[in-house]
Image (cartoon, rainbow over all chains, first blue to last red; front, side):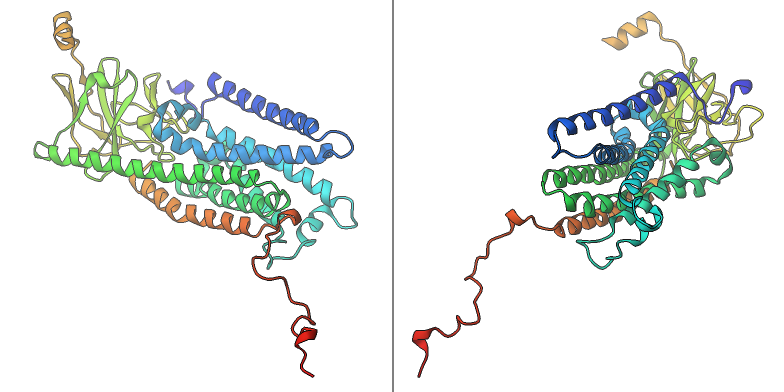
Amino acid sequence: VSTRYSAVKWNRNKRVYDCVVVCGIVLYLGLFVLIGKLAWPGDSGISDEVLLIRALGTCAFLLLHIVLCIGPLARFDHRLLPLLYNRRHLGVATFVVALFHGALATGYYHAFGPLNPLVSLLSTNTHYASLAAFPFEICGVLALLILFLMAATSHDFWLKNLSPSLWKGLHMMVYSAYGLIILHVTLGALHTEESSLYVVLVGVGLAAVVGLHLAAGWRERLRDGQRLSLAEKSRADSWIDVGSVDDIPENRARVVCVRGCERIAVFRYSGRVSAVTNVCAHQRGPLGEGKIIDGCITCPWHGWEYRPENGQSPPPFHERIATYRVRVVNRRVLVDPHALPPGTPVEPALIEELSHDTVASTAT
Amino acid sequence: MTRRHRYWHAWLWLVFGPLIIAGFVIGVRARPTPLDEQPRRSGPPESRPGDALQPREVVP
């Protein structure tokens, strides 16, 4: 396992994901320009440059909405988790498209005067006190700087070397970038377009992003509350009934919350059951949403690996996570909610195989 | 994701979400009104300087 271990795995799924993203962007840009040329033909039409600026801008705006919606949507439907695991790629693509939009717009509107285009961009309009004439370009520039910081530090080098809190804090700035881009679009494009359709479209996107995040947060809160009740009921014997072993898919986990503490991920693999903390030692990713690959629990966020029986990363790595005692009684999985020190070996609970008679009686 | 991070994230959106929506609404309300969509005045037409005193009302 150790010879194949890497912090971030580059597998076939990620290559397919990237191909789909690139093809989708190219297709969107092509369709936008084509429809634009058909809708406004002749000399009265929009120039190719402006059409491309708009295509790139709307594409980046749309991509950012998808990036922000993936997280809460994956909370509601776990089939979307693969999108969440590769969200970094979509974020970098958003930055690249936004960069082309900014570069083309700056060149088109500011490159033909005596001033340097960047100087012209930042100094031509100074009506900061007026909402109607506000220099909306500044909001776009600031958002682009934030997206640049995020794209630059999304590389494995920074993932390894920045502390979890710093890296996470840095990437939380995407919400600030989103707010700036909403202002950029509202004070820019929506002020020049007369149709109310664009206002409605931006409003729907904004409502989707905010509503999904709030709904997902509320759902997590309810989930924690339910698990807490379950834990309180089981406090007498101190072992928590996680559920039937048959409810846990092979090489996957069931996540349980205990007494207001961190969640526990209970994994089933090769006829055994082990329990570890749900929090990855790297960036606090949800281990319970990952799966066991090559005998190791693999974090869905960045591919960090831990052995399920002791919570230790395979050599030469030294990361450790908390483990929990677990047992299987009458095919019910029971977990001791008291976390053991990180890296403590725990004997996995064996799953007794059902005989044909037992299976028949269970089915009836 | 830790329990603390989940709660912090939820609170962030509780505060940040309405702020962005407020910015959007204020920005949209500041849109310049197109000439053909300018609202009609509901009151009487704007008075001209000479309207205040009609010839028939002039007291000699």
